[in-house]
Image (cartoon, rainbow over all chains, first blue to last red):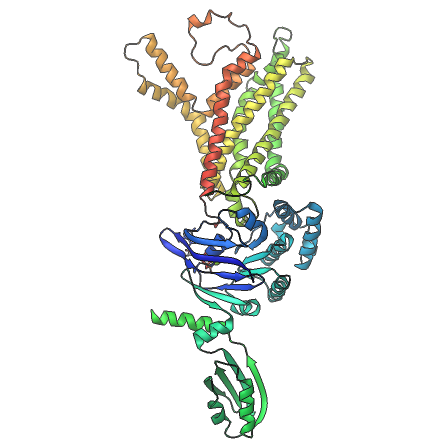
Length: 311
Length: 317
Ligand SMILES: Nc1ncnc2c1ncn2[C@@H]1O[C@H](COP(=O)(O)OP(=O)(O)OP(=O)(O)O)[C@@H](O)[C@H]1O
Ligand SMILES: [Mg+2]
């Protein structure tokens, strides 16, 4: 696996305050990486440095093997970027806006025409193709921004809060789009505050706080680190003595009873088999057994509560 | 740190897009209207006066540009007045407009340098200005031909074209200034106002100020001729810091072949030449060459300033 993003000690200081501090970020080719963190934690600044749009104060960056400060054209022709506030030329139509971008990327005009039409089709803007962007709603502009990425056909895309203001249907389509990009082998870097969306598409996430990446890994790993819980089971069973048997399971962190026959088991390892056996051994009746994904929302909330508590 | 890749990649794309914007925008409609009024007014003003002395004046065609008739100003005065305003109108929202539309970071994320964006915009402004000025020029020349019925000589056309070129350079200075302000100020209205303030300063106040400054720095103590001369020279030198003065002198020398010198002329210098005999084009051009160079230097200076300021700016608005 080769690394498409690699930073070492990356730091950006604005007027004496650290916007980004000693960042060690590594993203593999084909991965979907999510950047999380409160407002002002340095996500956008990191992205701008990856694209060579802001000079790092110190540290090194490599994107697709290029140095964005010295070889910005190489980087920018291979990376698609959607800024957090995406704007277009209001007097130009959707097609004209995209064709300007295509020309800046030196895509031959016949090819560009094809790509623009199929991209707008895919983003559900086929009917608005020749309408001035000034008449577009916020969400339609957002879709246009995504269509632009499809026209550019990059090796990697960087999205800064891309689902801001999208309706639920569009947000779902957007998640499908990201999965589609991943399927094509395109690396995705996604900064967002919508935790369930991040959880739904990202292979790994990084949690930013005050310019540092304080946690990094899969959601399961983060959950293990922050909550001490990597796995969670929802079990419904009838019978006597089940609770005692379940409590004895190795690796169990917490057992909660919800109602009469429902138990939530939080554990360090996957307990599905053991739990089922425990119920059967106790002579009980197993009604349901479902593994629940660890919840990024909880991890996030818990982490920042602890920080607030500690300080 | 060395950057890789051509800084000019994308210049033509940016220029083509910006020019298309300007030529189709509402701004252009206004400029076209202005151009039409200017041309018709100028020809109307000139033709009546000139007709009376057809045959006496060897530079009839050039008179089209310089003759005035109350209450209408001569075409050159009108152009000298309107060109800076047009140039400012084309440049005052060049950079801040991209920020306000939130297109800046999206455009700069494409494979171009900031250099290309700025230069593309500048060239587009200059090209639009050239289109407008050429249109007016052709209109005046054409209408003049129709009404006067006398074809211009080769030298007259050459002088007329050089005048057009000088006007373009003059406009380029103001375009450059407007772009500098469009980098400095986030609000296009502020940038426009600042540009117009500078223009007003040079149009209205600089002439007076040059006189006052000359009196301060080169005072008359005994009233000797040398002192008077030194003061006059100083005043002229100071006033030439204004692009308006440079342009006015260029126009004077180009469109009036009989002008033999710019600035103070002593009677002793005059006897070398028969007064009133027109200069050949090459000598008129020699006379204004430093002025032209000055205007072009100002253009480059403003562009460089805009460039440096723009490079330091954060892409985030
Ligand atoms: N141009 C600037 N000048 C000074 N400080 C800046 C500038 N841009 C950003 N900062 C500071 O850098 C820090 C990081 O900002 P950044 O935009 O990277 O945060 P973010 O994680 O993207 O936040 P959000 O979730 O709100 O988008 C903030 O404290 C911000 O105030
Ligand atoms: Mg941000």
